[in-house]
Image 1: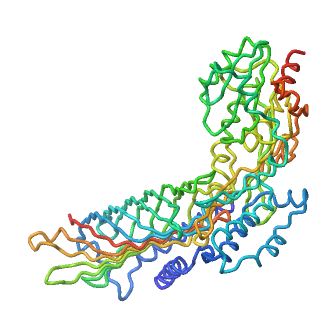
Image 2: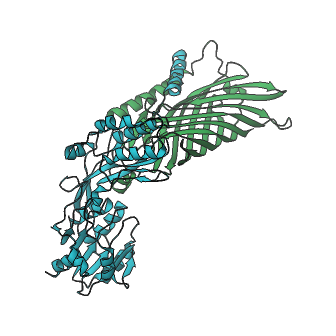
Image 3: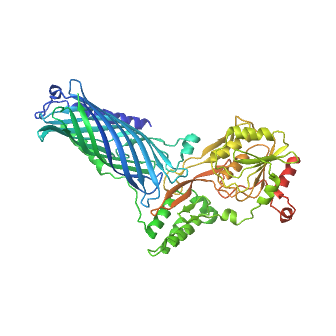
Length: 275
Length: 337
């Protein structure tokens, strides 16, 4: 456990060092984020799309179905605009079924992410962001097979390097924004029963056995990215934009000899408001 | 340094995007369903080493014997029959295959033995004015001995209900707790009832779980401790009646009671079932249940094949003809001694 703490602290220090180095002005990069007066942007999005879930603690079969998600995001300039603070809340619900279509799994999940991005602005229209985030999620996965292993609690906290890019351009004579953001967990902690351990043994008898597991990108190779287009609906109110996009959330874990994946491919529709 | 940062980020996101965590998905064919079922048991079943020692079970040999039987032309009924036959090799009442039309099972652990139970006789002893609480039937027999019939542990027991039962039976000289044909249910309910028969915390057994796919990948043995109930606790003699159909959580109950004072177990060996079962499924959607977490008695012996009684007593035909339940009458004599 002591060696694990040292490794985590070293990686955190490395992340901070990487971000700090981005502050060095280069020949071709103009750090003028704070001069451009980026507004605060708040977004509300609804997403729907197919999901595929595998959790070998519950079943050897992969389940497929549909996912609904609500995303609320706030992007706010800080430190005279040279940084952005990004706070994201997500609530999702999935209903998936097995190949034989005689058993279902239900998923409920809340995700939170707090990120800070350093802004790099090579031109007026183009903006790059690079930084890191703390992410956490809490939810459940319930399988109608029943028995003594019908449900999985999903809880994790992670440090996630993240990046984004956005480009402002005229579309049908209206200033629109295409944005791409991506993050992936680097290190963290997650809850997991051991391979064949029942929840009765963990919570009923208090027998702990590697149930809070340190994770790395090797054990949780996951990625979340959002590609969106913001388009003003009304010329009179350019600060309110319609957002459409694609949200890809690929969560995976391989801990305690158990395998898990949850792949979401979601169509996003929402709106953004600038302040 | 900027280039290095850029490369590290790209590397990180590439690793995340290209690493796949997946499990082989077998085809929904007779061969695919066989492979999936054999593998689920191979990686999750918890009694391979124990049963190899007990009767020479070799799961790889079972694979070699059954694999040639699966052909693409099999009907679903044929598939089910052969898969269920394969599961029967485990001789485990906790191993079942569930389809929409049948349940594959091995019940030889009680079907091959006398029942030592007669519903007609039990109705004679209970009469019609027995009480019902916490899903159990109880009355005071005419020699002031309490009789408590527990047929299942499937339901949670209300602590208040148990208080009422033991308060009513408190004037009795002793208690007959008839567990025959109780096929189990919730281990927590078995603990709840057993907690009424001890005044102090007791070591009653051990349990383990699998930590990997290997046949002997297990955790350390964790103690099972029975804590006394805060409600009314029985302080007099108890005779627990058992037969071969006492299984799973009821088997656990007998294990707990054997650690409690003033308890005698009378009847036949219990049916066993010491593996807490998990479930999974195969490509065609049939569910499989299997023993996943082994449990042991306080001496670290497996109770998978049952617990021997303190007094082996069988139901005699002559007694049945004369309207007597041999086990109940034996219990009454033990309490009266």
